[in-house]
Length: 224
Ligand code: CA
Image 1 (cartoon, protein in one colour):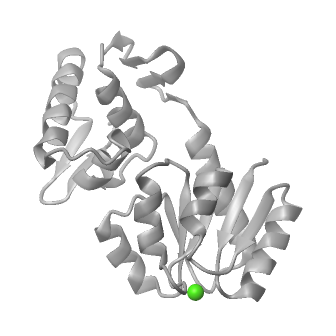
Image 2: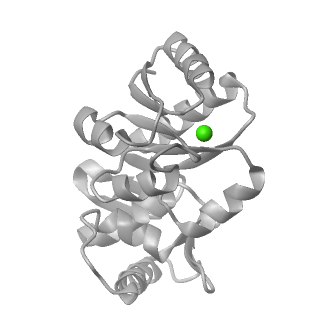
């Protein structure tokens, strides 16, 4: 696997260790030791993935993640020194793709980078019951076409890429409207409602998009 990676980490030794491991795994990593220029570097260099430390001088990882999501879908792996922080970060719906807790083994980081890139790169999702082909904007359940709008397709694709994961409304909105257009919370609910209706029309027995009360939605496809 190849790709340009940006490591934003103020512990220089750790950053270099990661850089060496990731380079050995075939990636092209570069390092940044402060949060100050992270957003502009990401905008200019368009890396394929960003490893983003949470605690950074000048501008922290949370702020960077939020700003980047305003213009880019680049996969982001957040790195934090405390396991308890991960729950809090998940609650903030920053739009990060994965979280890694320090201390970690560089091998684990390489494995997570590969997993996130694989997930991000898969434009076609295919399981026994669901097919999502982005090239053709084709979505089928049990062989029945769903006739989705572009927004509905994107929503389903985003959620189906991580079955069982709960997505907050803000996270879904950031994905659908990356330009941060101001849209009401209910916009997502109404897209989801239509999406569910189309799914129910071809597959009335099963619920595939589940509401998680007070949090958001998740995709879960019952087995055949
Ligand atoms: Ca740090």
